Image (cartoon, rainbow, N blue to C red; front, side):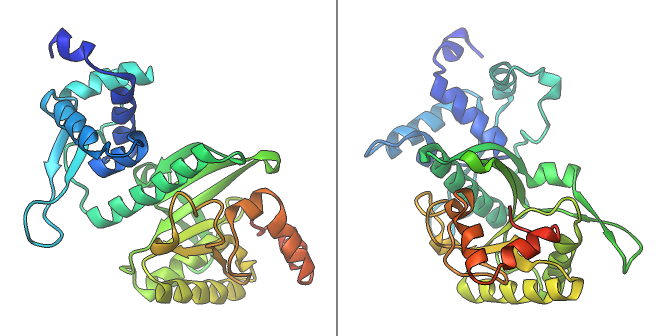
Length: 301
């Protein structure tokens, strides 16, 4: 790579490379939403991505068209030149830069891009929030390397539970809270979903709110029902399961909007209610169930 190309890199370029790496690959539209906020900046974003790709900093793989007409979007990963630049920018040895800066497209592409959309919504919302700050995010790649281990009495051995992501949000005076993400595209059978919900309730010492983002309202309703059934069977507090739909989730709504329905709890709750203590107060007002459940080690906060 020429010195001229390296000198032409801007701080925004480096931040874009870091995002592609952190997301395990994304599309140009994700970069546009994150870094090009001015009106009419989409063409500028696409031109910059084209230059980063032609210079070897990014690797662009053309995806199939969603409609069958024309060409699809480009899936971006770190290019061969980008690895060394990225390692220097992140201040880590090149050898420690994980190898998932790969040029291949994820096998479950729709699922991966849906996770990217949810993560981006949370990141943008936290950047604009006076209450929340996103401290860290583990991808499904990270979770496969270090899954949650749950002792399953029915099998007599530990069983791995692998969320689609794990994030830590700082929530003002409420402190930090771990959340797990489940991006549900209605592709997991009811039987497998019931098993996964049961294992979340058995995860003693590692319980945290699990945010299910579903494809539609019918699936959301089904997950809430299955969660309550699993919680009753295991004598657990069902309220660690929070659900919403893709159509309700946006940077404007994900933290502040009353878009979350809670298993065994109310509909129309905002994550901001949890941060400011309003959800706990609401639980107490409907009979003290929140305090009783938290005493059993299964509360949401």
